[in-house]
Length: 316
Image 1 (cartoon, rainbow, N blue to C red):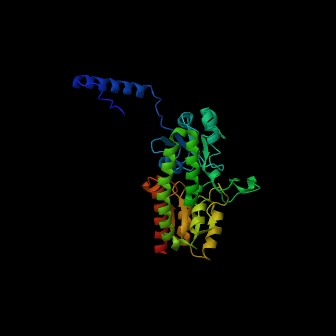
Image 2: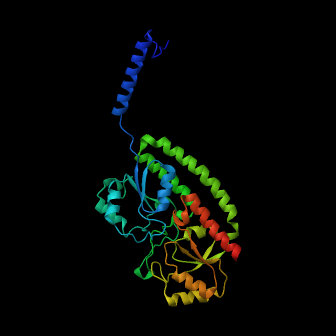
Image 3: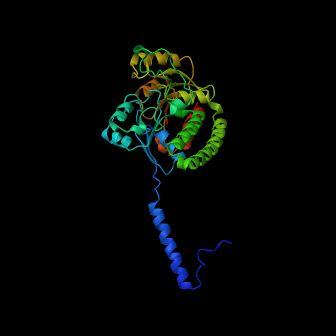
């Protein structure tokens, strides 16, 4: 028979004193037990900070950029170096998107946990099939990414694949909380798949639409939605629009109607506005990442993008 921890003594006062001693012992054991430290996560872009928050809401998550910054061009500031030095892991797009600044941060941070090939170095684009992978690259092609287009966060199917890979990496880094990461992934997947089914119903009117866009920032979004980008405001990737190039794009627009001329929140709107004024086509500043247009998470980002594009269809 199992004895109660409070019934070994008959006198009420002695029982209370025994219970008090047990509480004191329990408190001492808790103090001696190793404290669970929240993971410290450095995200290169806000979309990855948002995904990390879905899987590790208690982590200390920092995003090096905002939705209104060009993730290609970031200054390796001392504050970013300090953040990466303290990080348990980083989550970045990869595919050379951050090649102009992340390697400098890694070197100066001198944190062995976040060196490439370590578990703490997580590149989202490496987890999925990438579009526009190039076998041969030359400087004449502009600022192209030989490893493929890095803007993978704008395809919800790839987001799901990346979430699964990220949960596995978190379990590898922090095995004591492996069950928690799996539960969070399951909860996220349930919500994401339900939202995805709804989005794919809503966006059917977008299939077959044509657009002009700035850079290839929305390449994966257009691929998912069945939208064709017929021209780029950049003459070559990474090069600013020129008057000669915009004039040639204008001639293309005279032959085919558009859904709109699209640019991301972080890109200079002047070229899109000039072309819109000359062609009388609508100009659409599209939300690119979490934080744009007051979007607080990935769900809100996709809802906002879809809302903007469907509004353009209604205006057409």
